Amino acid sequence: MRIRVGHLYPDYLNIYADRGNIAVLAERARARGHELDVRAIGMHDAVPGGEIDLFYVGGGQDREQELVARDLVAKAGPLRSAVESGAAFLAVCGGYQLLGRSYRDVAGVELPGIGLLPLVTVAGKGRMIGDVLLDCTWAGETLAGFENHAGRTLLDEGAEPLGRVVSGFGNDGSSGYEGCRYKRAYGTYLHGPLLPRNPWFADRLLEEALAHAGVEERFAPLADELEHEAHAVSAERARTRGGRR
Ligand code: GLN
Image (cartoon, rainbow, N blue to C red; front, side):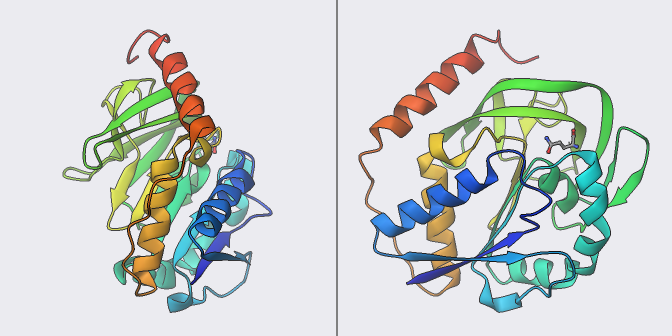
């Protein structure tokens, strides 16, 4: 199968090893006999609606978010209907914030989001930086990563977080939640990058992208020795941070 990936704003939102996440998806798809077809969806480009199985948007600073926010709003309709029709979506950090309804940045500028995820974000004083460990009970797995954000993200009542914070700050440093998921869309502050050290999550995204393309497949696990070691090192660094702060 060709798994069709739409990489939003690779020229603008790309500062947190976002290409590394895409490379992991490509390699893990290849190991299962599939091919990743990655298309850039940039400023002023139309979203090729039903032709994309997995959308990806990466992280950026407030400046880059400001540059893309209005263009992203113009793409809101096709992106939202793609997710409603079962497309998968991974949004990291700056991209995650813009999938919510709004992001008020450090300078107090209110940027519109696309309301695909039920949340709002407001930048606060001080950045939340460090290793993070999440318990994703919905998947029976953990996620290890690194966060670096000024934004405090508040989920709407009843919204599903990506995980419960074991160590680290998470969405806002106080709720105990990190990220958000809706259907097959996932938003998270974890970069660093995320997918090399959390192979189960990469596989899940690929399986969900395949399901969107009409193929139900459960991948056999790969050996993943280095990946599991990377997860263990990252999880340990998060734990020695001294618990949730
Ligand atoms: N500018 C946003 C923040 O600091 C997002 C930064 C990022 O992508 N790390 O909250």
